[in-house]
Image (cartoon, rainbow, N blue to C red; front, side):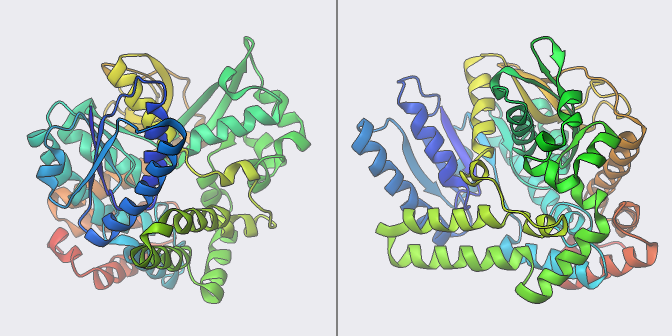
Length: 459
């Protein structure tokens, strides 16, 4: 099968390539050709050099892998003949992320690329491109499945599903990572634990950890040392987790500790730059040096990857009292494991239970059938079918419904060109504190991104 990766010059692509190489060792690889698509030839060349070094190392251990890689800057050529498409685009690049963060901080609200004002701006810029990509897939590769990595993942997956139906599946590694960490805290094998997780992308909760026929979550929550032995437990604290009776996705720290997260992000931005500015510096150095010394590209990439993993959500950890990431969280990856698990289940028609983003279809009470939710699904040759789950509690439902309404307003703003829908999205978000602030945000993002005037031509 041919796999096309949109955003093929992106920094995470070597993780996918590494997993695909490993998949060839058993002799039953699903993917035989990878097409990398990117609009930036320089980024494609740098990532291509990393993949060459990975291939050399694989060849030395296992022989020549049956996995061809080529690059394309033309979208139609990249999609032709694809059986699977991984979408990992970043509209506006990392420079766009920095502006998303800075405009929000200047308005006195959280600056984060997927949560709150920054996520709304990112969505307004990304949804139009995602819709064009979906239309191109429907035309050039109508039998292909799309696995969407592109953030804001739930919003983008919902927009694309209007074109591709159930042939688009959104993924995020946070729910699976949380479930694994919680299982290990109980001394359990993560593979033997069934995780009850539900919500939206970057807004979900583990409500149960089932092993040996019983739910072990109450046992974990009762043990302060165990629950605070992993990252989410330290972020939120055992007392709060007992109060809500669940384990929140790490991104809920922006909601449960909104004041502290905003103040820490603003202080860090003033001292050392925003998270986006830090990543820009790290990655710009990698892409520049890899172009100069392609033979060293892998080492440069791996060093940059480790620095990035160490600093992931550093502001939140600082706001929670300060702690370092655990060693197992520095290995990188997660996205590629979920993406390849989806791909194998679909391509081989081998059922797998995976937590992914799909249209609800009544699985999660309180949200309509077309709302893209993040829940456990049965994935096989017919796609991903959400498994029925118990309702969110009142607090969880209220938060999920509020954020889903924001996502819907962003999509409506893009489809209609209406600035009114865009204003409603900003004003309706739980992390924006007034309509006046919402107006300042909309004006700020229109000034920071002149291209948004084409997306939102109507006042």
